[in-house]
Length: 102
Image 1 (cartoon, rainbow, N blue to C red):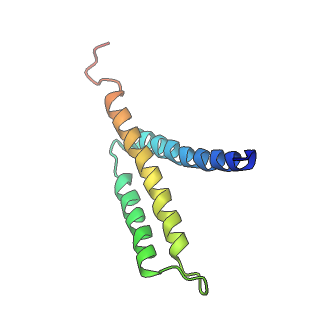
Image 2: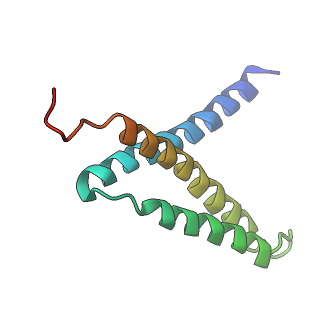
Protein backbone atom coordinates (compact mmCIF):
# COMPACT_ATOMS: atom_id res chain seq x y z
CA UNK A 1 0.00 0.00 0.00
CA UNK A 2 1.13 3.50 -0.68
CA UNK A 3 0.82 6.46 1.63
CA UNK A 4 -2.06 7.85 -0.43
CA UNK A 5 -4.22 4.83 0.32
CA UNK A 6 -3.37 5.00 4.01
CA UNK A 7 -4.31 8.68 4.14
CA UNK A 8 -7.62 7.94 2.43
CA UNK A 9 -8.38 5.23 4.97
CA UNK A 10 -7.38 7.51 7.83
CA UNK A 11 -9.63 10.26 6.50
CA UNK A 12 -12.58 7.88 6.11
CA UNK A 13 -12.17 6.42 9.60
CA UNK A 14 -11.83 9.87 11.15
CA UNK A 15 -15.11 10.94 9.54
CA UNK A 16 -16.80 7.80 10.89
CA UNK A 17 -15.35 8.45 14.34
CA UNK A 18 -16.48 12.08 14.24
CA UNK A 19 -20.04 10.98 13.50
CA UNK A 20 -19.99 8.57 16.44
CA UNK A 21 -18.63 11.30 18.73
CA UNK A 22 -21.32 13.67 17.42
CA UNK A 23 -23.99 11.15 18.39
CA UNK A 24 -22.57 10.84 21.90
CA UNK A 25 -22.47 14.62 22.32
CA UNK A 26 -26.04 15.01 21.07
CA UNK A 27 -27.19 12.35 23.52
CA UNK A 28 -25.65 14.18 26.46
CA UNK A 29 -26.99 17.56 25.36
CA UNK A 30 -30.47 16.15 24.83
CA UNK A 31 -30.51 14.54 28.26
CA UNK A 32 -29.30 17.78 29.88
CA UNK A 33 -31.80 20.05 28.08
CA UNK A 34 -34.98 17.93 28.02
CA UNK A 35 -34.27 15.25 30.57
CA UNK A 36 -35.53 12.60 28.13
CA UNK A 37 -33.90 10.91 25.20
CA UNK A 38 -36.13 10.64 22.15
CA UNK A 39 -33.80 11.53 19.30
CA UNK A 40 -32.88 7.85 18.90
CA UNK A 41 -36.33 7.27 17.40
CA UNK A 42 -35.75 9.94 14.76
CA UNK A 43 -32.31 8.52 13.97
CA UNK A 44 -33.79 5.05 13.65
CA UNK A 45 -36.49 6.32 11.28
CA UNK A 46 -33.93 8.20 9.16
CA UNK A 47 -31.76 5.09 8.95
CA UNK A 48 -34.74 2.96 7.95
CA UNK A 49 -35.76 5.60 5.40
CA UNK A 50 -32.27 5.55 3.87
CA UNK A 51 -32.42 1.77 3.60
CA UNK A 52 -35.88 1.97 2.04
CA UNK A 53 -34.53 4.49 -0.47
CA UNK A 54 -31.89 1.99 -1.58
CA UNK A 55 -34.56 -0.67 -2.06
CA UNK A 56 -37.00 1.40 -4.12
CA UNK A 57 -34.30 3.02 -6.27
CA UNK A 58 -31.89 0.38 -7.54
CA UNK A 59 -28.53 1.61 -8.83
CA UNK A 60 -28.11 2.03 -12.56
CA UNK A 61 -25.25 3.76 -14.33
CA UNK A 62 -27.58 5.39 -16.85
CA UNK A 63 -29.96 7.24 -14.58
CA UNK A 64 -28.05 7.09 -11.31
CA UNK A 65 -31.11 6.93 -9.10
CA UNK A 66 -31.08 7.62 -5.39
CA UNK A 67 -29.30 4.43 -4.36
CA UNK A 68 -26.04 6.04 -3.20
CA UNK A 69 -27.86 8.83 -1.38
CA UNK A 70 -29.84 6.17 0.48
CA UNK A 71 -26.65 4.36 1.48
CA UNK A 72 -25.06 7.59 2.73
CA UNK A 73 -28.19 8.54 4.70
CA UNK A 74 -28.58 5.06 6.18
CA UNK A 75 -24.92 4.70 7.13
CA UNK A 76 -24.64 8.23 8.53
CA UNK A 77 -27.75 7.91 10.68
CA UNK A 78 -26.64 4.47 11.87
CA UNK A 79 -23.21 5.81 12.91
CA UNK A 80 -24.77 8.72 14.79
CA UNK A 81 -27.19 6.27 16.41
CA UNK A 82 -24.29 4.11 17.59
CA UNK A 83 -22.67 7.15 19.20
CA UNK A 84 -26.04 8.17 20.62
CA UNK A 85 -26.48 4.79 22.33
CA UNK A 86 -22.94 4.95 23.73
CA UNK A 87 -23.63 8.47 25.01
CA UNK A 88 -26.97 7.43 26.51
CA UNK A 89 -25.34 4.57 28.40
CA UNK A 90 -22.54 6.86 29.58
CA UNK A 91 -24.91 9.58 30.79
CA UNK A 92 -27.06 7.01 32.57
CA UNK A 93 -24.18 5.55 34.56
CA UNK A 94 -22.05 8.65 35.05
CA UNK A 95 -24.60 11.32 35.93
CA UNK A 96 -24.47 12.86 39.39
CA UNK A 97 -26.84 11.39 41.94
CA UNK A 98 -29.90 13.41 42.90
CA UNK A 99 -30.16 12.11 46.45
CA UNK A 100 -28.06 14.94 47.85
CA UNK A 101 -25.38 12.63 49.21
CA UNK A 102 -21.78 13.63 48.37
